[in-house]
Image 1: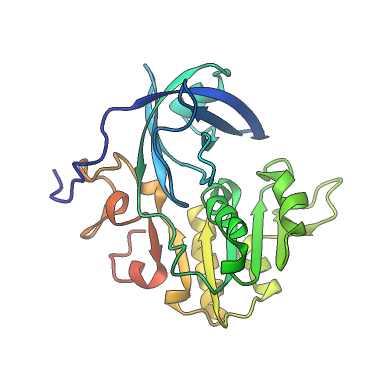
Image 2: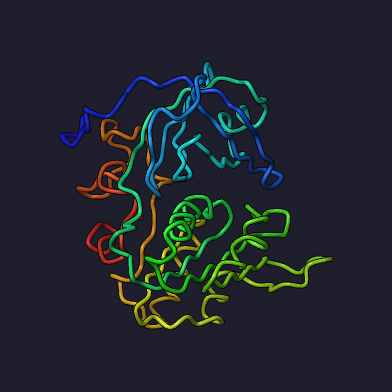
Length: 279
């Protein structure tokens, strides 16, 4: 057992009801959950996660979308295995267990007064979306917001209404969307996210870059940002995919002396470079 175990964290799930399910892509659904009497069992900060359990299948750690109103918990879940396959088959009215919140979340206070660059790929937009929504809710606290997002195809782009209609209409906000390969009916940018970031070439002066996506995408995004002159302190990412039990007890998420579920999952690149190269 880790001596970092956060024993004050709740271990028994709270039962919530699924009140809405929205298809985001062919293999991503958003689940909206709340207590039977209304409201939520806990509040989440942007970038935090929660454990979702579905008996008798099991449980898994998922990013939980921040919302100021705290009317429900929202999880965008990609269909990738046994638990997520079963979750994708449930209907409104189903009961689930949730516990949390877990993780440190994004440094929203430290980023105030900065221009923000959000770089996401595929389902990696889900955790960044919380930070993006927070910035828009507190728009006066942040500078220019640039969002670069890509996926394999148009069908695989998450949160299309926000991407193409809501976010571009917000003051001092630019949204760039790309897909990996050309396809009929798509007249937008075609290419991979790291190259697109270099093409857009946002000035690093006074800017914080936040990235999340497939590990291979993050690897090349970090290389692109370094090439463009970003310092390690200006780059933030989340390692939530490594989170397991959420309380530092199982020891499966550690990198060196750091436990991702307790010390992260959000880190600056400067912090990550102090750890063994296992991330």
